[in-house]
Length: 546
Image (cartoon, rainbow, N blue to C red; front, side, top):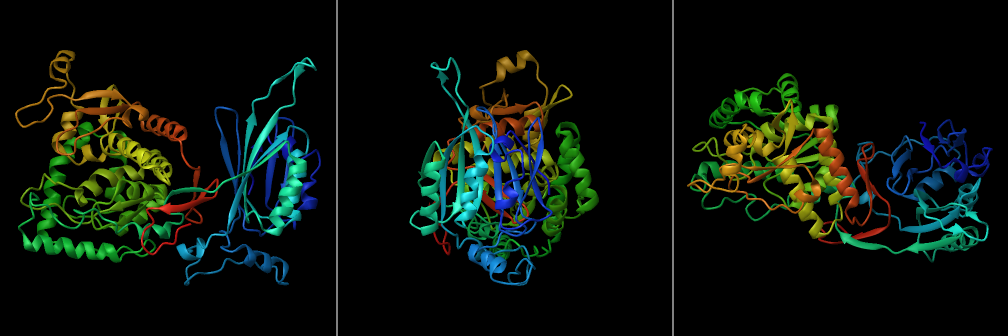
């Protein structure tokens, strides 16, 4: 595996491959530290539990480059050390957990070793980083992350020129202050660095670290998640309520790596689906974005989408995994914004399976299988949209309640009710629009300037707005825009494209006061964070804090 990490070569390495002499062993896998002048191969150990990112950039941007072992992390550093230094065998096969390679359980993965974060300030000179990192090997301390940021320097008036540039290196490693090897390491580093700070552990809202931990939050449905409100069309229909309870029970038993069981939909349920399909099909052709139309064709071809059949979640999830690495996870009903967005960080969409009551086939007071499969799912077959959704999810991990509200509003005004410009016209990419015949046309139909001027801000006799206000997509504005849930939206946000929506959302997430930076490793299905935290607030049942 080769990675080019420019601008670090002079700090990380000299003109010779000195790091090769200070690492435990050599292999055919390398990280290449590159600059405009040269590329220097740096051999890495063949088997330590590397799961480390090198991050570099200027004062306005930072780029994260990962060098990951071809094998998922060992969950226990001592296990790795013993297998490498105390066993004669050179075999480093990945241990199987309950017969499933790569499927580490939450308990196994997050019997987390203590971690420490430090800030090291180094002057820019050849081999500076190499001289420091060798002490981590010397004291058997396993690094999990390195991030560099340039330090703004001062003018050296005495020399009449510019002082030597400096870099801040944020380093995470296994172990805690008080451990003999960590104390010895810190003592050495104090003499090698211009500044050394040990960063405190931060307490944050609980969030999943491994995809298996989604099972701890999937069943935290809200009060009305499996129960029906009195004004629900199916409230007095006992057969309908029993059917909902049966589907809820199936969802509650599901685990993230299980095969999603087949749902045998009834003739009445399939008829309701067909009515929605027939109503929406012509409107999609007129108002849906090109990415939706393209993805819907794929869903018809690969997932059995048609007016006469409700497709199975298992088939769809398998297809999406191949297409964009997104999976579906059944849930019994509505879950909180925090839990729902946390799932998106793992490219996992919490999906209901029940369908709206047949007495009102074109109305539903909550997300149902028509909304999920006709509105959301086709868009997840588009890479930009899937990445966009994950950006919001990653930003939600450990976020404050205030920032969760901001992210939930951004989600609402984009993933649920977003518009994009296409061919000089407004097109829908939000699922709330793509599954609602009335609001899809209301949001996208062309109006004259006079109509807009006369109708914006006014409502009809049913309390519905006559004409929406269209604002350019700006997550910072959307994050402060409240929204109704029982009427058409008075305000929509218009992106130039899905790519535009994704990039602006990414920039906004980077500006949030996040407690840490999170990176999802699809190979190990694990979120890696850039500093030690304690997940102590809102801990779900059966999950130890930490």
